[in-house]
Length: 117
View 1: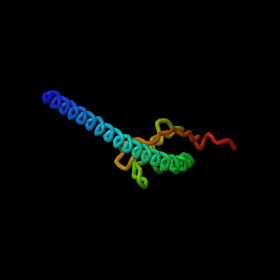
View 2 (view 1 turned 180 degrees about the horizontal axis):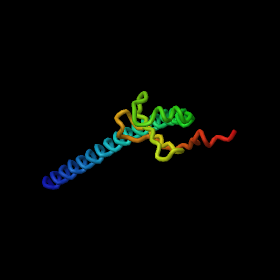
View 3 (view 1 turned 60 degrees about the vertical axis):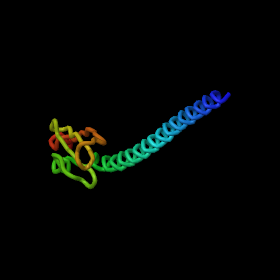
View 4 (view 1 turned 60 degrees about the horizontal axis):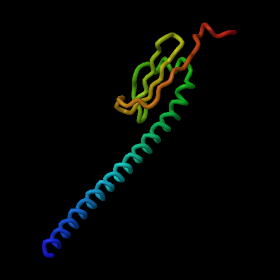
């Protein structure tokens, strides 16, 4: 009988240990999920702010786009304006280091000689 009580105690300790490990895994999962949600919210805010700025940049006339050719800091972002053809401009907004691309678009601006009178 005494040996049986020892085995039951050992089984109870093993069961509590397994439950503790499972509980810790659950807490770690919830913590990681919470951090992921926070990162997603931060990224969403950054993309929405960059989108509002891109809306303004995409309306710039040809002269302003030409003035901003290349890559330069623009507030909290890095704006890159490239002109692969005489009528197309590629606009890129990245984070301040220029490593994390947030938005990219291409806009068309007709040549001054193409304007009909």
